Amino acid sequence: MVVGSMGMNRPTWKPSLMVGLLYILSIFFLTLENGWAQQEGTREEPSYPIRKVMVFFRTEGMGSEESTIFYDSLVIYLQGNPYNKRIVEGLPIVGPDSLNDRASVSFRRACDSWIMVRVKKQTEEIEVAYQLYDIPYESYRAEAKFTSEFPSARDRSTFFWKPIREALRELPALPKDPVFTLRGVPGTKVLGLPGGVKQLNADGIATFAAPTPATYAFRAEKLGYEPLEQQVLLKEKGGDIVLVQKRGALVNLDFSLWNGQFPAFYIGFLPIPNSLFIKLGLTSFSSGLGPFLVNDSKFEPFVSYPLMTVDLQMGGYLSSADASVRVYMGAGLCIRVFYSDLRTMLDPVLPFGGYPLIGIEYAPKKGNSVFLEYTPRILFLDAQTDGSVSTGSYLQTSFFKDSLISGTAVEDWFWLELISFRLGYRVRL
Image (cartoon, rainbow, N blue to C red):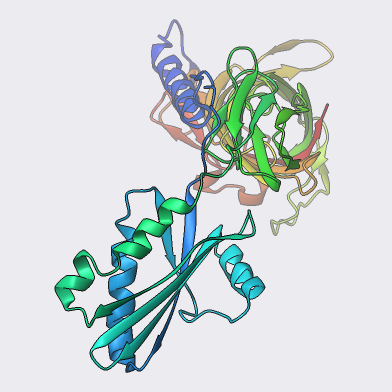
């Protein structure tokens, strides 16, 4: 099986260094995704909602250009009010005729009040009438008229609209938004609720204020737990929202075919569920599929070799735990064992090696999944050779038999195996 003599007392620091670098690289990518630091949640006090006023505007005796000039000056002047009232331009500007329709248009733009301003041009005078309506309280807060000489551009920007701006003071503050308390696993992040991202503190609590009544959809995420997506109806008096969080899978079982030919079984432990994994696997070459993609006159549908490999893998997921398609990365170590009726021993030529690990799994129902895993191997070559090494057909992928990419010696130190993958089914326990 080997052409050349066996190496004696050769240093092994070079392959060990390469395997260590691959391991460090996988952990680096894992920590980028998960972010181990956790921040404490903050308590949010009730807040007064900002009043939003929609402006409707009508003119009489003016052309379209003049009407636009007056409307723009009104909106700009009202936006500079010191009473913490937000001004929203009405669309359409003239607004509907009925009170209910104006309220409906305002509500669709998230406004809680509206003001209708009518401007009538009469020769050298301007007559202005306005109505300010408070939708939640169903009442007019201000109604008045005033007459003035035709204003100049400076007048319109300084004092002409002042009575209307002063009317905004009549809008009272709305009741404070009630405060709600989230309760769950400490460190959980909650997205989608008013006020931005919430994070539960060390006691598993976070508070927030929200306009009510209203229905909100939110998502809760915590490393090691299944993501939680939920809708909740918040009522006026506040209260508690309890997050029912389910811990992620602690064990995985992999049933696969190495290079689509030889059966492999792996058991994985997840010290951080849904995120970090450690796997121990066994691949048997005693019974496998033949090289069915190769035109060979000596084709055999099944092949058997007295060899097995034992693998140890470590890595982590780079995708959300509830994603249909998840990507993961890591690194692995493997040893190769010969066995027979008389003797079991390490492969004297390629005893061990390491490899980076890149995988993708598909779980349409967030449960068990199918997966494809690419593991290009770097095997330590324990033999003094002149560059020609025969390792037996059990090493080379039969799909690319006798091809450079199936396996090649790198000087007299390594055997590089680019075609190495697993296709299988993963069970979550």
